[in-house]
Amino acid sequence: MPVDQRAIIAANNNAHLYEAMFDAHGLRHTRLPFAFLGQDAPPPSYSNLTILAPNQQDDCRAEIAKLAQVFAGRVGLKDSFCQMELAANGFTPLFKASWLWREASASADPGNWQTVETPADLLLWEQAWKSSGSPTPQCMFPPQLLCHPDVHFLGEFFDGAFQAGCIANRSADCIGISNVFAATPSAATYPRATAAVAALDPNLPIVGYESGDDLDRALTAGFETTGTLRILVAENARF
Image 1 (cartoon, one colour):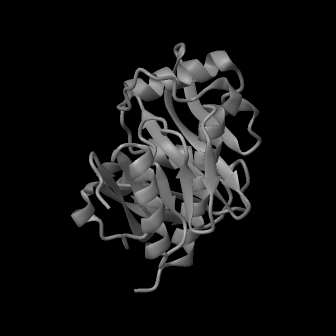
Image 2 (tube, one colour; image 1 turned 90 degrees about the vertical axis):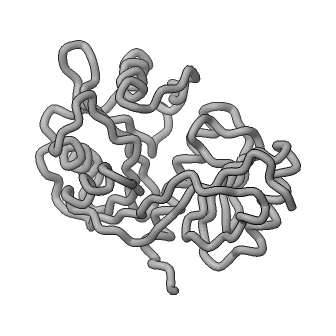
């Protein structure tokens, strides 16, 4: 089945965010034409390898085998186009999600959403993000990310805390939206997050991926699905 070019654009935008995250954590990585590879262990919830081009199973399999050796069989893979067959190698699906695309358009009203500009505010943003369903003891978003010209932390701030937020990351042909959260889930959160991202550059489409209730909320905010991805993990990968 042909792969939607918009899903390929979204996967590559996601890799731009991976590059920024790995750089901020001082982690080594490399970007091949068909995959992003983390040469050091990734931050929590990030994969060791993200596939960026379809129909590259042999090359991807070879790189995954190398990672399995480096990391003693513990490997996470973002199978961006659901083309890898790795069950016999010890991989199991963690979850599936849908790639998203929203055409460029004039931004809607984002309410009082704002851009995070200081390390102190970024810490408050991360605390709210963790409290809203992403707990981890590790600092996920070092302040170095505030200096990245293409990464923006956006949020709705009042009563001394961020009540909702998201990350926007710009690449040449789109803006990615990710890490959408709200202290109190609301049907308005995703549309307002989308509007805040669109305001960064109304001429670019917005991409991302979601699953479950967040996918439903994204669809009501004007996104359409362009393909399916899955996260595969192995505790003892065998090749």
